[in-house]
Amino acid sequence: MHLECRHIITSAPLLGSEVGKDRGERDREGDRSPSRRLRTLLSISISFCSSTLDPSQETPLKPPTPAPTSSGNGLIRYRSPSAPELSRAAPADLEAKMKRARQEPILDKIQRFRGVILVFAVPLLLVSFVLFLMPRSPAVISFASRKTVPGGGEAGSKSYAVIFDAGSSGSRVHVYCFDENLDLLPIGQELELFVQEKPGLSFYAKDPQQAAQSLVSLLEKAESVVPMKLRQQTPVRVGATAGLRALGAETSEKILQAVKDLLQHNSSLKFKSDWVTVLDGTQEGAFQWVTINYLLGKLGKSYANTVGVVDLGGGSVQMAYAISEKDAEQGPKVSDGEDSYVQKLFLKGTKYYLYVHSYLHYGLLAARAEILKVTKDDSDCILSGYHGSYKYGGNAYRASAKQSGASFLKCREDAVKALRVDEPACTHMKCTFGGIWNGGGGAGQKNLFVASFFFDRAAEAGFVDREKPVAVVKPAHFEKAAKHACQLSIEDAKAAYPHVQEDNLPYLCMDLVYQYTLLVDGFAIDPGHDITLVKQVKYGDAFVEAAWPLGSAIEVASSA
Image (cartoon, rainbow, N blue to C red; front, side, top):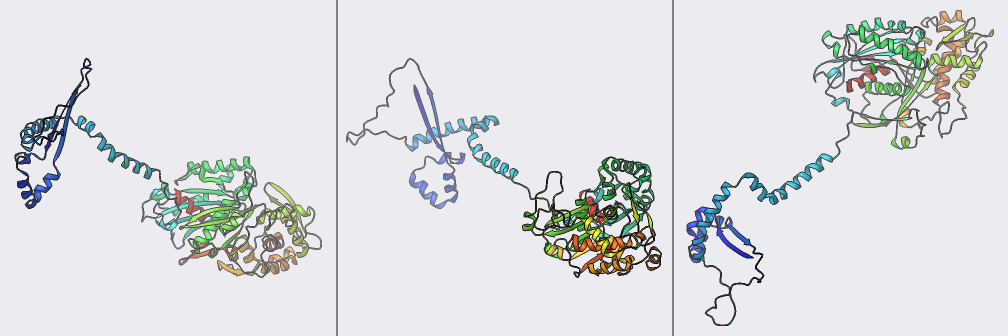
């Protein structure tokens, strides 16, 4: 093998003429010139080595014989090239190498400096990859920061939402107008359009097309308040509640399909098939809780500062209130297919654990059927002088008064049996009725707002002002009103309760007894505890219906 190495020491081309200067001169100039010091730091040492191997050579390589030194001390020394020798070799070699470097292709340069490139590139790639894998912040539903609106409207513009409440006692339509923060804006002189019609969809169980047609007048009134240019952006949602749930899957699906066809072919509003559905009781209760706490300005505050809600509909009753995280963790586990007792909600940056349960068959109209099932014959809950039948959910029940008339105490016994207050299936420490966990109570239940039929019957019975949308009462007020109503005949009741509709009058004693029993025995509320009956909630300078559709409108507006 032949090995040849050449060492070239150079700096920038401007230094080529100066390499021959002696050390003393360079040192003196270096002291005076900063540029000299910089150029020295930038000097390049290049070593070029080439080798050839002759396979026939077997003689080991020997170092060149060193020249003896003049010192005569017998030591072997190797002489380094002198500065003048380097100065003569440097210019030519440097020029050749620099010429080849200028002609070197870019790919070759990348290949030659691949080590340096990798040193810098690999860490950058690793950092980028780690940042990519880092989890994003979880989305938090915050109505106050919402900047998009139904149908994708721009911030600063109005938007609308149309919600049908297809209940067992009637159909109602709510139209809401929002700004970009989902704050309510007026529609005319009110903060919502609210119109209702009777009977409800479940009344037309055998005629789905007629059920859909019953919504036409409500749809026309809803569309009339939505500006023409916004109608195609305005979502329309139909939420059927307990009345349709009680009809069974096949019948309710036929009615819902007829309603979908109506909206698809006869409406100018934004429509999606899955916006027409039967709400489960958990959804209904959660929407109602959101509605009332939204209107009261409670959302975003501690759970202890929110209010609990009892919503007595026609087919079901819902209880919903916020509980502590500890109580939520201690809640019973439910079987597959059953609604969980606790929902997690993120509202205005605050996490809530919402206990919510819907008691199907225990709405006011459904409860009449349950109480009549207990007696089967003449009832202690029907006003004296009435003999007829009660129709609910496609079935007819005997509804005739006893000869002695109605009795508060005996009617209350029937109501307790219908509620199954002493249900042996209760496996939890605290139950309401029918073996249902009550959520554990707590601060979120202390302040109760009671809505829907509770307010209606109280106003008709005369112990709250029907012209005022909110009233603070006690369960004992229902007891007193029930005792008075149960003493009357059907004829006397007509004069005593002019605001009660004729078809509801025979059941006035039963309704008031049931409401008192539900509050005291069902939900274990002390008869002397204050509760707030609410029809509408003041929002700004106006009042808004305290019903679940507003909560539904907020949801569809937040996700549309």
